[in-house]
Amino acid sequence: MTLSTELPRGQRTPPAPPRRGRFTLADPLGALAILSVVAVVALWVMNQGGPLSLTASDRATGSLGLLAGLLASDLMILQVVLLARIPWVERSWGHDLLTRRHRLIGFASFWLMTAHVTLFALERSTREPTAIPDALLRLFITDSWMLFATVGTALLIMVVVTSIRAARRRLRYESWHLLHLYSYAGIAATFPHTFTDGADFHETWTRVYWWCLYGFAFAATLLYRVALPAWRSLYHRLRVESVVTEAPGTVSITFKGHRLDRMRTASGQFFVWRFLDGPGWSRGNPYTLSAAPTPDRLRITIKSAGDGSERAARLTPGTRALIEGPYGTLTARHRTRPGMLFMAAGIGITPMRALLEDAPYAPGEATLIYRYGEDEHAVFADELRTIATHRGVELILLPGPRRADTSWQAAGSAHRDGTPGQATGPVRLDDDVQVLKGLVPDIARRDVYVCGPPTWITAVRKAARGAGAHRDSVHTEEFAW
Image (cartoon, rainbow, N blue to C red; front, top):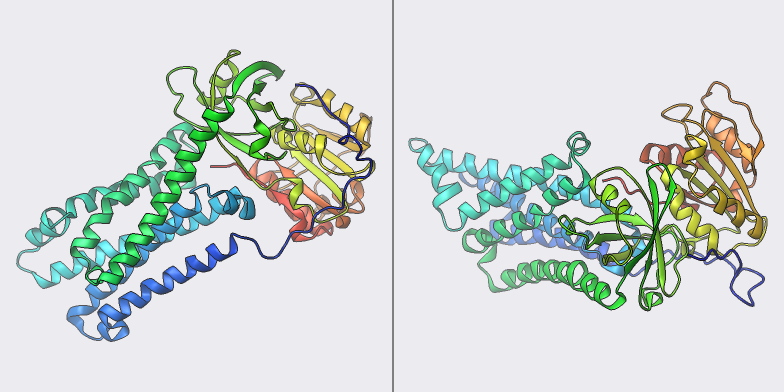
């Protein structure tokens, strides 16, 4: 890929950075999500009598169980919509924020579903104390569509268990992603019993409400997670053009395609990639662009960390690629300050490398702080120096391991454009803040773009805020799963 370090022709002064609006097209979706929860509670009040139903001992357990089930169903639909890859929602909120909200809503839905099952089991047992096994058999197996509901609940429990951090650390990304897809089957399996057995589904208008809710989630998922990626993959016809080793265990892959500019991809964004190179092609992996996109080429850089990345390193020219995206908000479109500070650790340099290439800034307005282990693992070192020279970027290199798990600093010395700088020392309580202030005194006038391991991002975010950066000016995109 040709490296372009000049501003577009005729553009000698970068345009004024856009201000982030306080209202986006995604905001109404948040209001509608809250309204849907209110509507569910209203349905329960209208059909069950609300709090009055809790005063009757023979109805209280079942009434609470029904409310828990209704809320669990509503939240399950909401979490599907959050990750339906709706473009304007992704652009407004960012994939990492949507993922965090998806996890929060998912766990809330799980506990409500657990309460729903437990309360109805208790109700049946209380109603038929002399035939508890038969009562539970009918509840979970023989009643209309209840076997499907039981299987669906088991699938959802499996997904939740594998989403716990301790479990995720033991799974490969590909395995976790495959297991996570079972949540769709689980939701579908629990759906029918609500219409045949649910008291809140007997009225025509309530059926219409729930059918519309489920229908919207299904349509959004089908359109944006299946149809749109399939169309883009067929139309843009991406193929591997070259595979280049950047560092031990790290390769850059350049793809050539048709009319890629029509996707309006921005530096800092990522795609979910699938490579048609044989068995395992259906498993997608998220990789960020490592060079500014052009009308006919995209480049990604991958560090070996699992089966998917190891397969990518063995790709040959001509291999077809399927894509989902572009996703992510770590772009210059969200810039709010005159200056820019880019901070990267390890393979997190990939989006920063692309942003440095084509972001709108003048000489002296941008600084890159790049932390890495050994010199041989300094990905794009030569390209970064070339960009720094041509575009007037201050380049600060931080080689060596992290000084502490809670620090963003490296144990080695800081280098400005290859010149030795600070010496290392013990990490004080406010050391991260003071060092960052010393390196970038005008950080309050800059947007801070950060990419790296999640704990490192957290350390940078705290240091940047302590050094004077505004909360809305710190941009991150976490790819942890």
